[in-house]
Image 1 (cartoon, protein in one colour):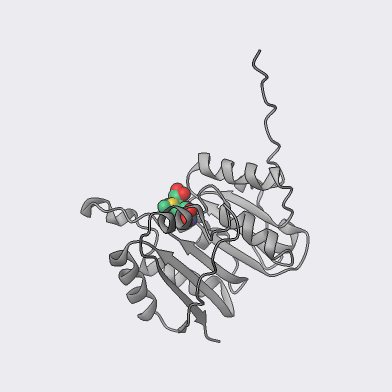
Image 2 (cartoon, rainbow, N blue to C red):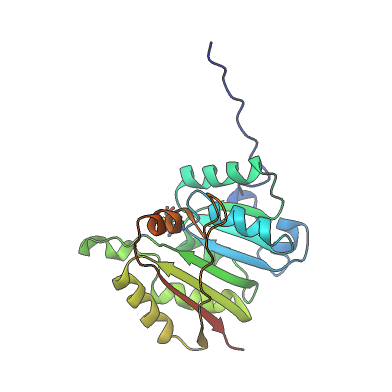
Length: 211
Ligand SMILES: C[S@@+](CC[C@H](N)C(=O)[O-])C[C@H]1O[C@@H](n2cnc3c(N)ncnc32)[C@H](O)[C@@H]1O
């Protein structure tokens, strides 16, 4: 006899954008119910980064923006299953959510890991990392805040580096040596796990926003 599983309650982890009315500096304290620093991940996929980062840094809040409703829900279910109080997922397109909803100078870190490369020439305009995204990240980061990026695609990574280098106020920082994973899911993200296990090179950069 097959037993039907009851759906996981994601109400505390999957944001309803229609219910997100705060747009000013108080947005984060009302969303997370505390004044802890907030880190944003663009393109959270199934939420491994959010789970690991929120678990290891309980005094920071984590918000993931994920364009695929299916993945946004999977990530929120993962957070709900683990009872993570300090991470949530916003289902939406970061290119629209950032300018409409993210207050200026309100984030400690922006993470973008393994953004879709959209290989075909006619699809490249779908890439999330553009000049206007970099300008938005500059607007929403606090002075001293960081942008952290990783990609397995050298060409796209070079485009990203050039975009950030052409933008004022970003200073590149040294990237720490990645640690050996201590368990099956001890990776930055699911795509990092997949590519490291395949032995592919991974390109990484960290930038600080100067005041
Ligand atoms: C290659 S996957 C990487 C997922 C995750 N960062 C990882 O490393 O495992 C890229 C993710 O970005 C999401 N994405 C693409 N464009 C986006 C956008 N404009 N706004 C938010 N998410 C986006 C995709 O749906 C997908 O889940």
